[in-house]
Image (cartoon, rainbow over all chains, first blue to last red; front, top):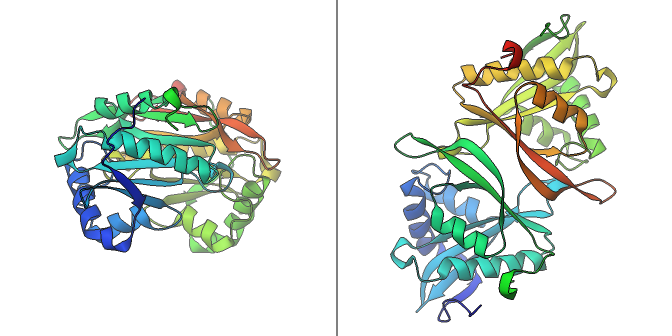
Length: 176
Length: 176
Protein backbone atom coordinates (compact mmCIF):
# COMPACT_ATOMS: atom_id res chain seq x y z
CA UNK A 1 0.00 0.00 0.00
CA UNK A 2 1.48 3.40 -0.90
CA UNK A 3 2.07 5.82 1.94
CA UNK A 4 -1.02 7.98 2.33
CA UNK A 5 -0.78 11.75 2.49
CA UNK A 6 2.99 12.02 2.00
CA UNK A 7 2.97 15.72 2.90
CA UNK A 8 1.60 14.88 6.33
CA UNK A 9 3.67 14.95 9.50
CA UNK A 10 2.43 13.12 12.57
CA UNK A 11 4.00 14.19 15.85
CA UNK A 12 3.11 14.11 19.57
CA UNK A 13 0.51 16.60 20.73
CA UNK A 14 1.96 19.65 22.51
CA UNK A 15 0.14 22.26 24.64
CA UNK A 16 0.63 24.81 21.85
CA UNK A 17 -1.73 22.69 19.71
CA UNK A 18 -4.65 23.24 22.07
CA UNK A 19 -6.48 25.87 20.02
CA UNK A 20 -6.13 23.95 16.77
CA UNK A 21 -7.09 20.62 18.35
CA UNK A 22 -10.10 22.10 20.09
CA UNK A 23 -11.34 23.59 16.83
CA UNK A 24 -11.33 20.12 15.25
CA UNK A 25 -12.70 18.26 18.29
CA UNK A 26 -15.53 20.75 18.59
CA UNK A 27 -16.35 20.56 14.88
CA UNK A 28 -16.48 16.77 15.01
CA UNK A 29 -18.28 16.34 18.34
CA UNK A 30 -20.83 19.07 17.51
CA UNK A 31 -22.21 17.02 14.64
CA UNK A 32 -23.33 14.38 17.14
CA UNK A 33 -22.93 11.83 14.38
CA UNK A 34 -19.73 9.95 15.13
CA UNK A 35 -18.78 10.36 18.79
CA UNK A 36 -20.81 9.79 21.91
CA UNK A 37 -19.40 12.92 23.54
CA UNK A 38 -22.07 15.52 24.22
CA UNK A 39 -22.16 17.88 21.21
CA UNK A 40 -21.67 20.80 23.63
CA UNK A 41 -18.75 19.27 25.53
CA UNK A 42 -16.75 22.18 27.06
CA UNK A 43 -13.32 22.96 25.67
CA UNK A 44 -11.22 22.10 28.71
CA UNK A 45 -13.05 18.84 29.31
CA UNK A 46 -12.61 17.85 25.70
CA UNK A 47 -8.91 18.71 25.60
CA UNK A 48 -8.16 17.02 28.92
CA UNK A 49 -10.02 13.88 27.97
CA UNK A 50 -8.20 13.71 24.66
CA UNK A 51 -4.68 14.46 25.83
CA UNK A 52 -4.21 13.82 29.57
CA UNK A 53 -2.42 10.65 30.73
CA UNK A 54 -2.89 7.77 30.52
CA UNK A 55 -3.94 8.91 27.03
CA UNK A 56 -1.26 9.64 24.44
CA UNK A 57 -2.21 12.04 21.67
CA UNK A 58 -0.67 12.91 18.34
CA UNK A 59 -1.50 15.55 15.75
CA UNK A 60 -1.28 15.40 11.99
CA UNK A 61 0.22 18.55 10.54
CA UNK A 62 0.15 19.72 6.92
CA UNK A 63 1.69 22.95 5.70
CA UNK A 64 2.13 23.97 9.33
CA UNK A 65 -1.56 23.49 10.19
CA UNK A 66 -3.03 20.82 12.45
CA UNK A 67 -5.54 18.86 10.36
CA UNK A 68 -6.25 15.86 12.56
CA UNK A 69 -5.44 14.04 15.77
CA UNK A 70 -5.26 10.58 17.28
CA UNK A 71 -5.47 9.37 20.85
CA UNK A 72 -4.45 6.00 22.28
CA UNK A 73 -5.30 4.94 25.83
CA UNK A 74 -6.13 1.79 27.79
CA UNK A 75 -9.63 0.66 26.90
CA UNK A 76 -10.08 -0.83 30.37
CA UNK A 77 -8.09 -0.63 33.60
CA UNK A 78 -6.07 -3.43 35.18
CA UNK A 79 -6.73 -6.81 33.61
CA UNK A 80 -7.95 -5.23 30.39
CA UNK A 81 -5.31 -2.50 30.04
CA UNK A 82 -3.36 -4.40 27.39
CA UNK A 83 -6.10 -3.47 24.90
CA UNK A 84 -5.84 0.05 23.54
CA UNK A 85 -8.70 2.29 22.70
CA UNK A 86 -8.07 4.45 19.67
CA UNK A 87 -9.83 7.69 18.76
CA UNK A 88 -9.37 9.82 15.68
CA UNK A 89 -10.57 13.19 14.43
CA UNK A 90 -9.96 14.90 11.12
CA UNK A 91 -10.68 18.54 10.32
CA UNK A 92 -13.95 18.33 8.34
CA UNK A 93 -12.50 20.82 5.83
CA UNK A 94 -9.66 18.36 5.12
CA UNK A 95 -11.68 15.14 5.05
CA UNK A 96 -11.09 12.65 2.27
CA UNK A 97 -7.38 13.38 1.94
CA UNK A 98 -6.02 10.26 3.61
CA UNK A 99 -5.44 11.93 6.96
CA UNK A 100 -7.56 9.46 8.91
CA UNK A 101 -5.79 6.54 7.28
CA UNK A 102 -2.34 7.99 8.01
CA UNK A 103 -3.31 8.61 11.63
CA UNK A 104 -4.69 5.08 11.90
CA UNK A 105 -1.58 3.43 10.50
CA UNK A 106 0.57 5.53 12.82
CA UNK A 107 -1.57 4.78 15.88
CA UNK A 108 -1.50 1.04 15.27
CA UNK A 109 2.27 1.09 15.16
CA UNK A 110 2.51 3.42 18.17
CA UNK A 111 0.14 1.28 20.22
CA UNK A 112 2.16 -1.84 19.47
CA UNK A 113 5.35 -0.05 20.46
CA UNK A 114 3.71 1.05 23.71
CA UNK A 115 3.10 -2.63 24.48
CA UNK A 116 -0.60 -2.88 23.72
CA UNK A 117 -1.73 -6.22 22.33
CA UNK A 118 -4.89 -5.12 20.57
CA UNK A 119 -6.89 -2.03 19.65
CA UNK A 120 -10.61 -1.70 20.20
CA UNK A 121 -13.27 0.78 19.12
CA UNK A 122 -16.24 0.60 21.46
CA UNK A 123 -18.81 2.55 19.52
CA UNK A 124 -18.43 2.93 15.77
CA UNK A 125 -21.69 4.42 14.58
CA UNK A 126 -23.13 2.09 11.98
CA UNK A 127 -24.04 5.01 9.71
CA UNK A 128 -20.37 6.12 9.62
CA UNK A 129 -19.59 4.04 6.55
CA UNK A 130 -16.39 5.84 5.66
CA UNK A 131 -14.86 5.06 9.04
CA UNK A 132 -15.99 1.44 8.96
CA UNK A 133 -14.45 0.93 5.50
CA UNK A 134 -11.21 2.56 6.65
CA UNK A 135 -10.87 0.39 9.74
CA UNK A 136 -11.72 -2.77 7.85
CA UNK A 137 -9.02 -1.91 5.32
CA UNK A 138 -6.57 -1.60 8.22
CA UNK A 139 -7.36 -5.07 9.53
CA UNK A 140 -10.10 -4.36 12.06
CA UNK A 141 -12.98 -6.79 12.34
CA UNK A 142 -16.47 -5.97 13.48
CA UNK A 143 -16.73 -8.21 16.55
CA UNK A 144 -19.99 -6.86 17.90
CA UNK A 145 -23.15 -4.97 17.02
CA UNK A 146 -25.01 -2.95 19.66
CA UNK A 147 -28.67 -2.47 18.76
CA UNK A 148 -29.67 1.19 18.97
CA UNK A 149 -26.66 2.12 21.11
CA UNK A 150 -26.10 5.48 19.43
CA UNK A 151 -28.63 8.27 19.42
CA UNK A 152 -28.35 10.72 16.55
CA UNK A 153 -29.07 14.36 17.31
CA UNK A 154 -32.51 13.94 15.85
CA UNK A 155 -32.98 11.33 18.61
CA UNK A 156 -33.13 8.41 16.18
CA UNK A 157 -31.31 5.40 17.60
CA UNK A 158 -28.91 3.59 15.29
CA UNK A 159 -26.74 0.54 15.86
CA UNK A 160 -23.12 0.86 16.88
CA UNK A 161 -20.31 -1.53 16.08
CA UNK A 162 -17.50 -2.85 18.25
CA UNK A 163 -14.37 -3.16 16.11
CA UNK A 164 -11.20 -4.93 17.18
CA UNK A 165 -7.78 -5.77 15.87
CA UNK A 166 -4.98 -7.74 17.47
CA UNK A 167 -1.65 -5.95 17.16
CA UNK A 168 0.40 -9.12 17.03
CA UNK A 169 -1.02 -9.98 13.61
CA UNK A 170 0.43 -8.29 10.52
CA UNK A 171 -1.64 -5.57 8.93
CA UNK A 172 -2.95 -5.95 5.40
CA UNK A 173 -0.25 -4.66 3.08
CA UNK A 174 2.16 -4.30 5.99
CA UNK A 175 0.48 -1.07 6.99
CA UNK A 176 1.49 -1.37 10.63
CA UNK B 1 -39.90 -17.68 37.46
CA UNK B 2 -40.13 -17.80 41.27
CA UNK B 3 -38.74 -14.83 43.16
CA UNK B 4 -35.10 -15.50 43.96
CA UNK B 5 -33.73 -15.12 47.45
CA UNK B 6 -36.99 -14.03 49.11
CA UNK B 7 -35.18 -13.08 52.33
CA UNK B 8 -33.15 -10.52 50.40
CA UNK B 9 -33.75 -6.79 50.61
CA UNK B 10 -32.35 -4.53 47.90
CA UNK B 11 -32.07 -0.86 48.81
CA UNK B 12 -30.03 2.17 47.69
CA UNK B 13 -26.43 2.28 48.83
CA UNK B 14 -25.79 4.61 51.80
CA UNK B 15 -22.45 5.90 53.13
CA UNK B 16 -22.82 3.63 56.16
CA UNK B 17 -22.46 0.66 53.81
CA UNK B 18 -18.93 1.66 52.80
CA UNK B 19 -17.07 -0.86 54.96
CA UNK B 20 -19.27 -3.76 53.93
CA UNK B 21 -19.25 -2.83 50.26
CA UNK B 22 -15.50 -2.39 50.20
CA UNK B 23 -15.01 -5.83 51.76
CA UNK B 24 -16.97 -7.38 48.89
CA UNK B 25 -15.50 -5.23 46.11
CA UNK B 26 -12.00 -6.00 47.34
CA UNK B 27 -12.68 -9.72 47.58
CA UNK B 28 -14.06 -9.79 44.04
CA UNK B 29 -11.53 -7.49 42.38
CA UNK B 30 -8.57 -9.17 44.10
CA UNK B 31 -9.26 -12.43 42.31
CA UNK B 32 -8.49 -10.70 39.01
CA UNK B 33 -10.84 -13.16 37.34
CA UNK B 34 -14.01 -11.26 36.63
CA UNK B 35 -13.35 -7.50 36.64
CA UNK B 36 -10.74 -5.49 34.78
CA UNK B 37 -10.11 -3.32 37.85
CA UNK B 38 -6.57 -3.66 39.14
CA UNK B 39 -6.61 -6.37 41.84
CA UNK B 40 -4.99 -3.87 44.22
CA UNK B 41 -7.40 -1.00 43.50
CA UNK B 42 -7.36 1.30 46.57
CA UNK B 43 -10.44 1.45 48.78
CA UNK B 44 -11.48 5.05 48.14
CA UNK B 45 -11.02 4.75 44.41
CA UNK B 46 -13.09 1.58 44.35
CA UNK B 47 -15.89 3.02 46.47
CA UNK B 48 -16.03 6.30 44.56
CA UNK B 49 -16.05 4.54 41.20
CA UNK B 50 -18.85 2.26 42.35
CA UNK B 51 -21.11 4.78 44.05
CA UNK B 52 -20.43 8.37 42.90
CA UNK B 53 -22.78 10.06 40.42
CA UNK B 54 -23.62 9.55 37.65
CA UNK B 55 -23.52 5.97 38.99
CA UNK B 56 -26.42 4.69 41.08
CA UNK B 57 -25.65 1.88 43.49
CA UNK B 58 -27.76 -0.52 45.50
CA UNK B 59 -26.93 -3.13 48.11
CA UNK B 60 -28.50 -6.49 48.78
CA UNK B 61 -29.03 -7.10 52.47
CA UNK B 62 -29.77 -10.38 54.19
CA UNK B 63 -30.21 -10.78 57.93
CA UNK B 64 -28.88 -7.24 58.33
CA UNK B 65 -25.66 -7.96 56.42
CA UNK B 66 -24.69 -6.57 53.01
CA UNK B 67 -24.10 -9.56 50.74
CA UNK B 68 -23.93 -7.94 47.31
CA UNK B 69 -24.21 -4.75 45.33
CA UNK B 70 -25.21 -3.42 41.94
CA UNK B 71 -24.25 -0.27 40.06
CA UNK B 72 -25.96 1.31 37.06
CA UNK B 73 -24.41 4.19 35.10
CA UNK B 74 -24.28 5.53 31.56
CA UNK B 75 -22.10 3.26 29.45
CA UNK B 76 -21.07 6.20 27.25
CA UNK B 77 -21.52 9.96 27.51
CA UNK B 78 -23.78 12.11 25.35
CA UNK B 79 -25.15 10.30 22.34
CA UNK B 80 -24.62 6.91 24.00
CA UNK B 81 -25.88 7.76 27.48
CA UNK B 82 -29.24 6.06 26.95
CA UNK B 83 -27.45 2.71 27.31
CA UNK B 84 -26.73 1.68 30.89
CA UNK B 85 -23.70 -0.16 32.08
CA UNK B 86 -24.46 -2.60 34.88
CA UNK B 87 -22.00 -4.01 37.39
CA UNK B 88 -22.62 -6.56 40.09
CA UNK B 89 -20.71 -8.07 42.99
CA UNK B 90 -21.71 -10.78 45.41
CA UNK B 91 -19.92 -11.69 48.63
CA UNK B 92 -17.96 -14.81 47.66
CA UNK B 93 -19.07 -16.43 50.92
CA UNK B 94 -22.71 -16.05 49.83
CA UNK B 95 -22.31 -17.04 46.17
CA UNK B 96 -24.80 -19.42 44.62
CA UNK B 97 -27.75 -18.20 46.67
CA UNK B 98 -29.55 -16.25 44.00
CA UNK B 99 -28.19 -12.88 45.09
CA UNK B 100 -26.71 -12.05 41.69
CA UNK B 101 -29.96 -12.92 39.98
CA UNK B 102 -32.01 -10.82 42.38
CA UNK B 103 -29.66 -7.87 41.91
CA UNK B 104 -29.82 -8.31 38.14
CA UNK B 105 -33.61 -8.40 38.01
CA UNK B 106 -33.76 -5.34 40.25
CA UNK B 107 -31.16 -3.43 38.21
CA UNK B 108 -32.94 -4.08 34.92
CA UNK B 109 -36.13 -2.66 36.33
CA UNK B 110 -34.33 0.27 37.97
CA UNK B 111 -32.46 1.11 34.76
CA UNK B 112 -35.69 1.13 32.76
CA UNK B 113 -37.31 3.38 35.37
CA UNK B 114 -34.33 5.74 35.15
CA UNK B 115 -35.01 6.06 31.42
CA UNK B 116 -32.27 3.85 30.01
CA UNK B 117 -33.16 2.02 26.82
CA UNK B 118 -30.66 -0.83 27.05
CA UNK B 119 -28.09 -2.37 29.36
CA UNK B 120 -24.61 -3.35 28.22
CA UNK B 121 -21.75 -5.32 29.75
CA UNK B 122 -18.49 -4.38 28.09
CA UNK B 123 -16.23 -7.12 29.34
CA UNK B 124 -17.72 -10.39 30.55
CA UNK B 125 -14.79 -12.74 30.98
CA UNK B 126 -15.43 -15.79 28.82
CA UNK B 127 -14.33 -18.12 31.63
CA UNK B 128 -16.99 -16.68 33.95
CA UNK B 129 -19.57 -19.25 32.92
CA UNK B 130 -21.86 -18.71 35.88
CA UNK B 131 -22.26 -15.02 35.05
CA UNK B 132 -22.80 -15.70 31.35
CA UNK B 133 -25.52 -18.24 32.10
CA UNK B 134 -27.18 -15.85 34.52
CA UNK B 135 -27.27 -12.95 32.07
CA UNK B 136 -28.49 -15.14 29.24
CA UNK B 137 -31.32 -16.33 31.47
CA UNK B 138 -32.24 -12.68 32.07
CA UNK B 139 -32.49 -11.94 28.37
CA UNK B 140 -29.01 -10.69 27.54
CA UNK B 141 -27.46 -11.69 24.24
CA UNK B 142 -23.77 -12.02 23.52
CA UNK B 143 -23.37 -9.39 20.80
CA UNK B 144 -19.59 -9.43 20.62
CA UNK B 145 -16.47 -11.44 21.41
CA UNK B 146 -13.14 -9.69 22.07
CA UNK B 147 -10.19 -11.98 21.39
CA UNK B 148 -7.78 -12.05 24.34
CA UNK B 149 -9.20 -8.86 25.83
CA UNK B 150 -8.91 -10.05 29.45
CA UNK B 151 -5.65 -10.98 31.09
CA UNK B 152 -5.94 -13.40 33.98
CA UNK B 153 -3.61 -12.86 36.93
CA UNK B 154 -1.38 -15.59 35.59
CA UNK B 155 -1.07 -13.35 32.49
CA UNK B 156 -2.96 -15.74 30.24
CA UNK B 157 -5.21 -13.82 27.87
CA UNK B 158 -8.78 -15.04 27.52
CA UNK B 159 -11.63 -13.75 25.38
CA UNK B 160 -14.20 -11.35 26.77
CA UNK B 161 -17.81 -11.02 25.73
CA UNK B 162 -19.94 -7.96 25.11
CA UNK B 163 -23.47 -8.65 26.34
CA UNK B 164 -26.47 -6.47 25.64
CA UNK B 165 -30.16 -6.31 26.34
CA UNK B 166 -32.74 -3.80 25.24
CA UNK B 167 -34.95 -2.67 28.11
CA UNK B 168 -38.01 -2.08 25.97
CA UNK B 169 -38.35 -5.83 25.35
CA UNK B 170 -40.00 -7.99 27.99
CA UNK B 171 -37.73 -10.19 30.07
CA UNK B 172 -38.03 -13.96 29.97
CA UNK B 173 -40.57 -14.94 32.58
CA UNK B 174 -41.41 -11.31 33.17
CA UNK B 175 -38.36 -10.90 35.35
CA UNK B 176 -38.01 -7.21 34.66
